[in-house]
Image 1 (spheres, rainbow, N blue to C red):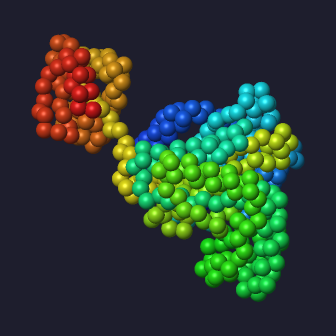
Image 2 (image 1 turned 120 degrees about the vertical axis):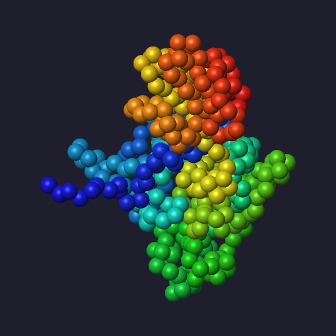
Image 3 (image 1 turned 90 degrees about the horizontal axis):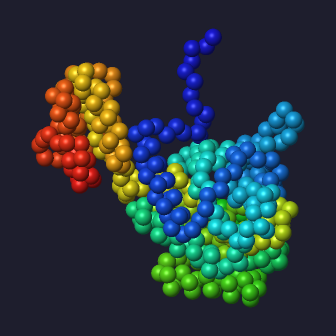
Length: 421
């Protein structure tokens, strides 16, 4: 048998205990933020039929062509680890008749997604998203709500330097008119296109506009503009969205080359990007996808949504030293037979009061236990010996400030710890 140590799968990262407090703090903030806007949680399977993503994302997209984790199971069905959440969410709503029976829905989900990409900073093969979907709303007010929500979240998380780009993709007819003009233009420059762009030229020409290759930028800049093919109703809706954003004081810029990488988008699309993240700088993106429910076999229902890249937002939080994780409130140090029994009661009384408690386990003298208490990051040590146990008190010592040590009853100790929280 090989003695080689087993490593994690490439591009799939462990989150260790020293890192997880930031994740937990982020998740708590996000859930409170979503509750404040009336969004309800939905949870979908990680594994879905492959056809779900081919029909929704588009067979000519990079995700479907190159990035999905797909396999055939024992029943000979093709299954895929979800590369994004919107298609799964809409599939669940159609399957269970949620929209037709319950009316418009404001929903959110969170969890891992999977894409077989080249791992680099900000890009993992297992990554995490918070997805927000509003189904049954025609907009543009709900689109604006999503952007106002995001703007508020960045403030709550202490994230700075985030920029919002907007574009209007129009309806399917507008994109078909534009697609014909774009293909004609790109064919004139076919010899100068890179390999990816030549591959996309006839299958998915709008994705050429999203190329990050510096050698392609002059060609992209000279391409025809989609705005010239967009009809009045779609243009008016996009204007109304901008008017709401201006009134809400949400800064944005129009980016006519923003197309998004999934075929189901139409109308308003957007992307929030963060500074200092390198090439993978999109932290949140989304838009309107009014045709997706019909694509997946349901009734035509207007919808829009966005997804937040958790790992990338956490990078911005770390850079700005925002969202500090809450420390343990008290570490209980105990020595003696009576103290051991009493300390369990004290720990539970502290927890009943909402305090985070570490009860020392594993033995050791008082000095060693106090070193463990200090290393734990706790704000206070509650020292319990047999004398304290007999008197029903603890010796409370502040570990993070010069406040000395004093005996206190349990209610007094709870009050003192909470006052310094």
